[in-house]
Structure formats: structure tokens, C-alpha cells
Image 1 (cartoon, rainbow, N blue to C red):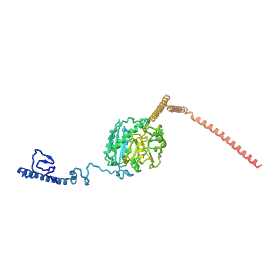
Image 2 (tube, rainbow, N blue to C red; image 1 turned 120 degrees about the horizontal axis):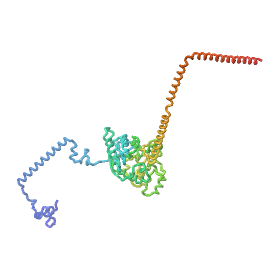
Image 3 (tube, rainbow, N blue to C red; image 1 turned 90 degrees about the horizontal axis):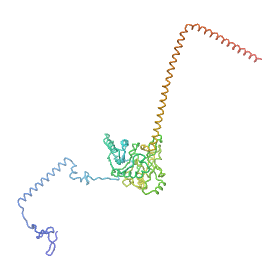
Length: 500
């Protein structure tokens, strides 16, 4: 109720004759007293009725349109008229809103049965030669492909890595086999100024390790932050140059139900180098010697394994391999290598990452392992479960192979010269076997001709020969009889002596 205005009050009534409206003076504006009735004219009444008719027609048309739309599209019309504010389940939410319950993506031991999604992260740099081999492994994964989302990061590449990558990925996704295509595919390009060459000597040289590892850590973090989705339960890191690995590696590692787990990584070698060798020395347990060494280093220093400059005396996963050991045997680790890592996505959501700085004197994957252990996550390795990295000859290996090739060529040249000398000797002296056969034939012909010439005297000569043979036989028989007689007489004398 409006306040009552008395004669002595300073409050001005709203409809005072003085012309105030809403507390503001009207001045010279036209004023109509609210207490006076003025009937409207005929034209005004006609316009009002016409307006009401149009309103009624519009309402009827809208109702008819609504009924027709309902009969044509069914319940989908509700979402149209609700402008996306109502969902089919009658929950009030926008169509662009997504709801995720992260308690359902913690990662379990049998994720393939619970349809847990895996994010496969693959950093690439000048990887064109290795991509065909990588995609052959990718196609052979036994984990359901539609549950695997693949993310590639192409950085600082000078070859055709991107083109070859796109071609192979499109071929897999267009496969007629329903089980072959993967889930979401992400290809990300980002350069980080990596200037270290990709040859073995440059990549594994001691001087380049600290800076190279820090840039690699940046690349991994960029790839992960761009590709990780709320529905991922696992993250699998895989190097593109793995040569041999079980097709069931995702299930094999997942069954252990660890927060971070890695296999053992070796590489094949030529026979003259021993046939095989441990490759990834970045998976290890901490040692007192290494801790003491870390205390002596600068704040920004990065310890790397496998170099004489840093003698850590740590137990390495690679050196504990037994080809006949239990592949499910576990070993707790402090540092991990980056060739093949399976980690639960929650590890990264909690804040563990790949340090691009010196974290406890380590960076990248080794720093990742250290950080995960610091945050009480389980970090293990499988010493007897082995995958194989490609063989990349070092500079010394290349020099040795060149020397072996030179020796091989020299031996082949010597053998060729020896064969040529033998051929020359044979050509100089001719074929002795052929000449001998010819001489033998000539001698046989001469003997035959001589026999023909002496054919007439052959019978007499033959008779004389026979007579001489008979005489000789008689003499021989006489000698035999004489010997027999002597033996008989000797026997008799012996008997008589015995009787005496």
C-alpha cells in the first residue's frame, strides 16, 4: 500500500495532480487525471479487435505446428523446443556438457574385460625408416583396438616422418577388418629445438645427454597434456624403433596391476660382437654410491647411466635377465627407461610428469620414476620379460665392420689370383691325360702290326716253348721227389733212434 499523504507531509503522491510520475516531475508534459474516464473512439476499438484476431490465429498455428512436429520426429522434438536444455533422460543440462566419473578410470588388472581405454603415446623424430615396422606391431596388438587411442608427436624432423605416418595410419583406419581400426588418432606437431643428431654416436654421447634428456621430457609432457582425456585409464609409452615385442604386451603388463611397470629391453648384435646385449640401462634401483655422488654434483646436473663419468654401481634391470626365468617376476625400481612404459593415468593426474629439469639429479623418464616413487606410487620392472630394440651400430662397430669387409675383399681377391695362376699353368703344359691316351693307342697299334708280320713263325715257336715248358716241369718234379725221399728217410731214422 502506498503511504498516505497528509496535508503536512512532504511525500508527494504518485498520481498527484501536479504532474509527478514515479517521483519525477513531468514539467509541461501532457497529463491525464486517473480519476477521469474518456471513452475510446471507434477506430481504436476496431484495431484492438483485429489485433486479437491475429493473436488467436498465431496461437492456433503454433499449436498445429507443434502437434505436426511431434508426430513427425517423436520425442526428438522436445530437444529442439528445449533449445538443448533438456536431455532425453529429462535431466536439465546443456548438450555440450560432459560428465565423467574419474573413480571409474583408476585402472585394473583386467582392463580389457572392463573396456578400459588406453592412450598410446609415441614421440617421433626422423622416424621414417622405422614406421613400417612400428605399424606392423601396432596391427598385431591383441588388446581391443577400439579401446586404444593413439597420439603421435612429430618434432624436429627433417625426413618424411609426417607423410609416412599419415599414410600408414589412414591405411589402418580404412581397413575392412572391423577389429583393426583404433579409437581416436591424434597427430601433433611441435618443435623443441633439438639439435643433437639422430646417429648413435651423437644421441648416446655423454656430452649431449643432459640437454637432450631435458628436451625429450618437454616433448613427452606436451604430448601427454594434449592427448590425455578424462576417460583414459592407462597410458602406454612406446618407442618407434622396438624390433620385437610380444603381441600381448599390454595385457601382460596390465595383469600386474602396478602404477608404473616396464619390461626388460635388450638388443641383438652381430655374432662377432656376441649376439646380444642389454640396451636400456635407465631402469635401476637406487644405490648408496649414487646418492653420495648426487650430493657432490651441481644443482642442475643430470646423472645418466652407462657412462664411466658417473659410476653409480646401481642394480640394473637389464643385467638381471635370465632367458629361462619367470617372466612375471617383479623388481622394484627407482628409475625407469622410456622404451616401453605402462602407467595408470591417475599417476599423471596426481601430478607426476617427466621433469624437464634436474629432479634429484635426474631428468625425463628416470626423473619420472623418482617422482612417482616420491609420491608413493608402485614402480616395478620385469627382469625376465624381454623386448628387443633395433641394433644401431656405433662408430667403433662401423669401423670394425669396414675392416672386416676389407679383409673379406682381400681374401676373395687372393683366391681369384690363385685360380687364375692354376689356369695359366694348365694352359701352358696342356692336358697330360689326353696325350697319354694317344701314346697308349699308338703303342697298341705298333704291337699289333709286329704280331701280324711274325705270324708265319708263330707255331714252331709255340712248339719249342711247349717243349721247354715240359722239360722244366720234369726237372721240378724230380726235385720234389728227392725232397720227399729225404723226408721219408729222416722220419725212419728218427723212429729208430726213439726205439733205441
